[in-house]
Length: 289
Image (cartoon, rainbow, N blue to C red):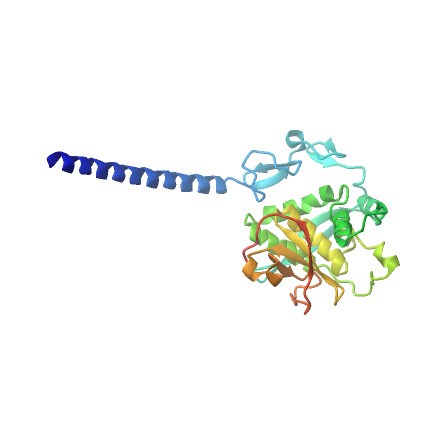
């Protein structure tokens, strides 16, 4: 009888020991997570490491250019600690307004006439074989993934990431920036002529004006580079485009998994019809809706 009680006591002591070991490991894991969370930049790069976006380096929580350590993207050359392109000519400073927590703020950004002219000369058409059918998504991807454009817009993404570490707050800033770029109602790109003259995202930023489809492409590019899942929401009945950002399904448009973002203005008024969801890129889910 005594042996049985001793055996049960031994098992009980082992269970208590295992319990405290689990609690210790969980506490250690939580401390580790918080330690590394505070030791990262706005894109998740750890302190004293190169970002995936060249030439940026994470120094004390801020992404800075350090081309000598982190190198440059293809087609750029190292100039001191920055990256230089032959298209970086005739620089011009622009101010991008955004609203956060009911405060109006601004980001100063440099755009280049040289790259703007290069971008405007990119052919808007796509060549297909006889048995291929063009899709709206093909043209969207061509605009958003235009050669070199990403490298010229990453500095804006980095500015947003340096403002706030929280991803959802970064999304709010990007949305507000695009919404505050003036909307051009005069342009009509439903014509055949207009369909081959629409602006690419960098051109919208340079001109500081755009129509719904052009501004939507710009926002999709920014959110994609911030790491979020994004889509174009096309409303055929209204001939209107907006942006869908990945969000909880129960809050999404028609159970699509994407929440509606109007890009023409800060007024988030949804069209009445059901949109065609043109998925552009998978990524993180925004939780602020």
